[in-house]
Amino acid sequence: MIFSPLDQFKIAPLITFQFAGIDLSVTNFLVASLVTLFMLQSLVFLLKEPTTNSFFVIPSGWQNLIEKIYGLVSQLLSDIITTGSEKYFPVAIVLFMFIMSNNLIGMVPYSFTTTSHITLTFFLSFSIFVAMNVIGFQKHGMEFFSLFLPANTSFFLALILVPIELISFIAKPVSLGVRLFINLMAGHSLLKVIVGFSWNMLLVENLKALAFIIPLAVLVVLMGLELGVALIQAYVFITLTAIYLNDSEALH
Image (cartoon, rainbow, N blue to C red; front, side, top):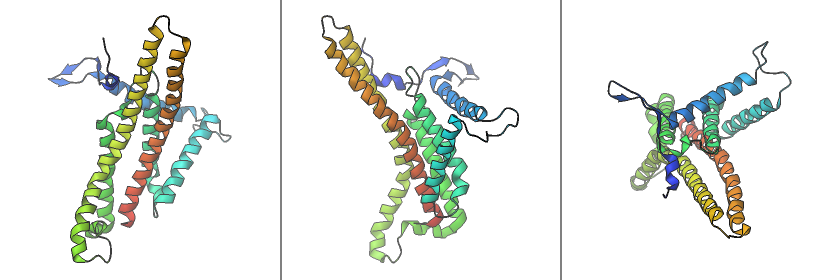
């Protein structure tokens, strides 16, 4: 039997349940998402002192890590968003932790990578797209449309620039969601192919050890690269989100 590298991305029901003709089955996608939320919530409780229900005065190793992540996201927002960056910090840190946690959980064997599905990544990116439009109209009103027309542009040049700017603006949620989805799916598919190749080499009789050690060594290197991609893609997602929000705030 030949297994496709894309089989790992199938959403499969673990517990089948239907009510009034509506499919309410518990799937591997749902379980992976709940595990991510449970892990993030548990991390907050583990970082708190049981007696005072507050963070430790002398931070532990995990608290140091979380504070570094908080500082990274906070600095990123302040560098990109010129005014009022602090009000976007709660959304940005939740997005970063959620995407990063899902990416890292997907690295565990026999787990499920929710961020390798366009439904989740596009939902996140489209929500950001809607938010940036609402923020732009609330702050600037009809002047928000000046985002599509650079200053001091002639009429004939505007006929060319406005459609280009409009298309690039609409493409923002698509590119934001597709970038995360494609990188995770491609990386996991490549790992699946290398694992299958290494396993087949291992099952071949009278084959020298070097024949399957080389694919396994390549697999280890690819695992490291995929781990880097999982972290970098979460950072890239937040960086682009901050850039889009700054466009709504400053109109440039």
